[in-house]
Length: 515
Image 1 (cartoon, one colour):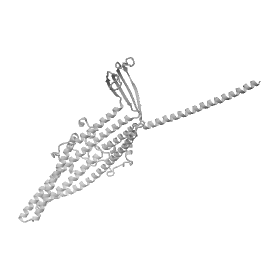
Image 2 (cartoon, rainbow, N blue to C red):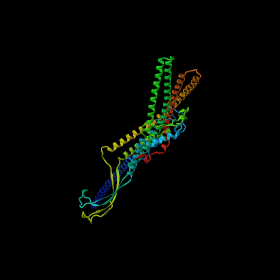
Image 3 (tube, rainbow, N blue to C red):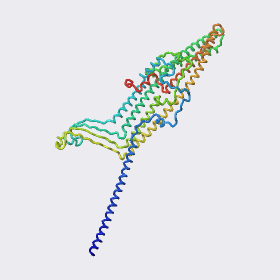
Image 4 (cartoon, helix red, strand yellow):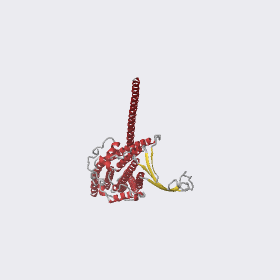
């Protein structure tokens, strides 16, 4: 009995030990499961974090719209109407604002074809187009074909085999690096196109103003020549009077001085006309020989007022004026350049594949290697340390985007200022021309009446000549004011984004224009 009790007590002790060991194992297993669960959560969080950082580093391929570009450039909205004009009717880009003539159209067409600046601008557009094509090629795989031969396994290329091979490699644009580069090049191309259109419009405006200047210079020279003739006649009359004792030597000297002054004015007018001719010839791509002749347009210079030109609203200039469009596209290009630099910080992934025929006889490997091979591979690289190179490149691209936004703001403000100045100038020049025209008409009537009085003997010839010269000088002032008003109309048309005949229909240069 004692032996049985002792055995039972021993069994109880063993069971207690086994129960403790099981409990310990259970606790250890539970602890391992807890640690595994904890590590899995950490790993999941790490994967999510890396994925989030990777997605945040991808390139944004959505181009900023016009409103986003404007908000990045300026903080204040545009006014709803022009300060110098209350006419908000729709602007007509194809109408110059006054009657155009066939001669002006021919001159502008000649300038578009032969002006050296246009050829330079056309080559810039072609360069931008080719750069856009070059950027697009990065989205496609590269395929190479080659061959190699050596009589030894130890070749100049170091332990390579002879044979013929073809390889293909493709840098996978996972993060949008290449696509952002393509979009940046396309935006630069659109910017160059808009710059080209604006250069053509600016050239058309310059030709129109030079044409007007030639007309005005020709009219002024003719009037000053008539004044020079009249002062010479006055001087001759004074000399005859001195001979018969009806005038003094002092009066003769005054007549001589007036004649010399009129002669000097005629010389300066001829120089101004030749200068205007050379300016127009240079714009046309001709040699500046001062030989070009333009037809006088009497109806254009003699009409009392110009028809009003609708200026539209300031917001319309942003979508119509080529230099503003060019600046906005330059901002888009800088935006995509920044996105490209941002995505370039992420890993680079490339796929490779190929096929080839190997000559294994030189290496003695006929049984170990197949003659036809089809290798396929992949490569991923992520520089862990580059001394901050890629980050600095991204920061530089970001600063360049800020610069492009500032330049866009400058272009907008310059465009608004040019429109307001042109509107004010047109108003002021028009008022001045009307006042001078009224004065000119009064002096012309005075000259006519003086001529009648001379015929009936009420006044002498000297008085009639003086009245005629006053009327001629008044006509010169009217022509100058009218030319200034017409030139301001040309400036206004350019500032509002107007077209000069057909240059707006060609958004890019033709191959002939480039070559």
